[in-house]
Length: 122
Image (tube, rainbow, N blue to C red; front, side, top):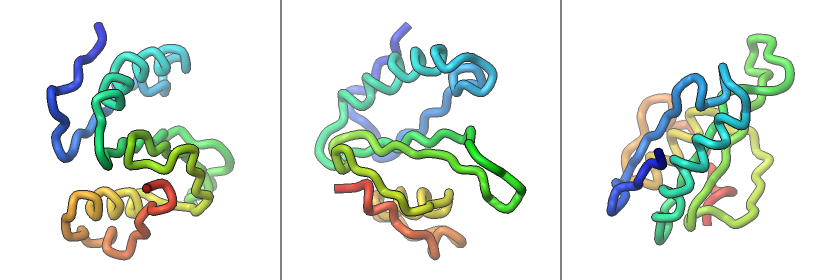
């Protein structure tokens, strides 16, 4: 069944697939189908400066315990720079800082030193 987005999107919507649909324990095709069915309708209902961050926690490269593994984040929606690429290395605090700034919220502890991911935003 295809998920239906709410009539109007809330200021913050957190969506997390299960361990199969996030492609951790199942094939990429399963994750792609889930994203198409569940994320595409949300993206289609976005307007103005709305953004969606899609972050994959499965990394590539060396993860020697010192943060060497790399993950990727996609910025989708009308508030994102079309075709934008930002080669800056961000971390979870930077993503949190970006979301807090977009919502006009004060920063939380370690995210206060985070860098807004402005290279992906209009």
